[in-house]
Image 1 (cartoon, helix red, strand yellow):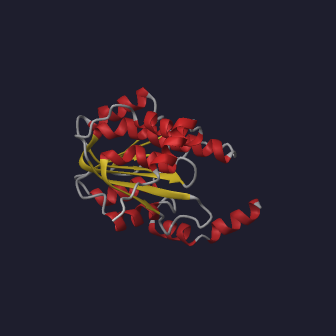
Image 2 (cartoon, one colour):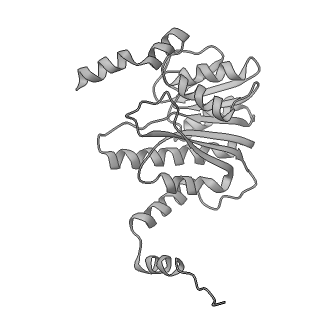
Image 3 (cartoon, helix red, strand yellow):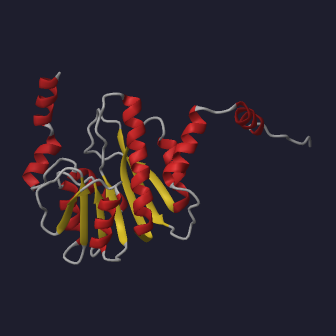
Length: 242
């Protein structure tokens, strides 16, 4: 099984294209295809790249933002420098890393947040899915306050339990949310990218994205009888006879 995967990896056309184009990983084409579809990044933008290792997305972001742009990447794993980008090592959910990002931003607002972040895989799908969704919610809770009016947030998520609840939690703060599967994603992968456009900073958050997400997910997985009865009741409509 492992030998079969290695052989397929070697034959991967996107991997070969990345190597010939000077990108560090095939995932660079995912961001390029997202950009082609949604036009998220412009020249001079400030971009935060979450989960930046090995640096392919940072390379693309530098190309798109140009000389006047600012690209800051963060990842638990260090990667080789990318000219024109600042790549930090740290956990974005920890306060020390967040403070470092704020220092580097120096009160500048972010135009675009892109995230290809993935948690450490345990092999248990339900556990991995829950951790991945919670991680995206945590990234949102930190980064949304740094996003400019009309800015965008794009993150990798995985199709499965919780994705609808995450979208519902984020939806009030953006005028448009789309799911997009780049051609460069592997056919066997369940990954999809959540593309959130036109951030509306005036929408007040009474609770965190994570709290909202976890409440909605708990309601879905553990509905009480009263809520079930109410949903059933409200699904019927009274019609007057003509």
